[in-house]
Length: 120
Length: 283
Image (cartoon, rainbow over all chains, first blue to last red):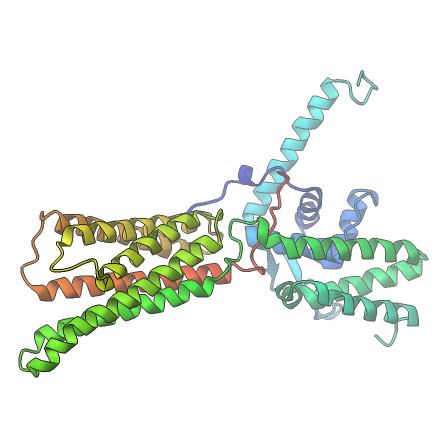
């Protein structure tokens, strides 16, 4: 039974998963690179530990959002033990769908003047 | 690492020991990487003089990951099935049932065999087959009950009950004289439909490859086919002229059930803690 998973089935994503997908958008990264990028994206508000990071990676691999990359950007400069990850087509669709969902939520918040200090 | 400070090496050694609390499958899959990322983060924390904050963050991360990875299988539909070995046992016993049916066929096909042996062998084989069917049914019921509330496991129990009932007929002192095929065929219809529905359910929730899902769906379709054939023969819509065909047909059904059980056991065993996952979504 070749059931294909729709990106909407996986929404909403948890914040770590969403930021990891963002970190891998357009670029292959290893674990520590992902951690650093997530910290940069969130100005340090979201600090992933190794356990949380690889727990998410395990689930994302199982869900078919990401895959391990065979290639290394620069083998001479890199540690052989590092594994690189990249987005799969489903991962690209899911991160796009989640970003659109968040954009709609942001638009709704703006329309309610949440940022202007509207009534709670 | 020789270039790292004494503090970094000590903390990394301690963290490597703490990682042993994580599930084995997780450690095998990601252990070296987790240690590598930890070492990189530790170096950065020492350079930036955030060591205390780093230690607190890592400890809370370790504690949370221990809980989450240990509990993940319980929250997943594809969770590791408790007692998957019962399905393996059931598959082996089903294969034995298939073998006894072939043995009976051999008895019928061998008219020149010693008459005394045939007289003895036929009732004994029926008795053996009934015992084996009863045990196989009990295994299936136990597997279903053990996983009660998960992934339609009641279908497995239903299959086991029907199989055990079939086994009981052969050994029960209450059943005397020849028994019509209709009640037996209805038990087989129940067996085939419940097993087919269970295989279909597992195929639906499976996150494994398309081949796996296709095989499970094929099991379900074949089960429906067998169920229809049992209805047709049981209600006399189709007549089996020769007893040879009857034994071959029954033997093929038990062989098929055995393969289904082994496939389901393999599927459920593989979907153990290493694959079983907490959802990536917020629910």
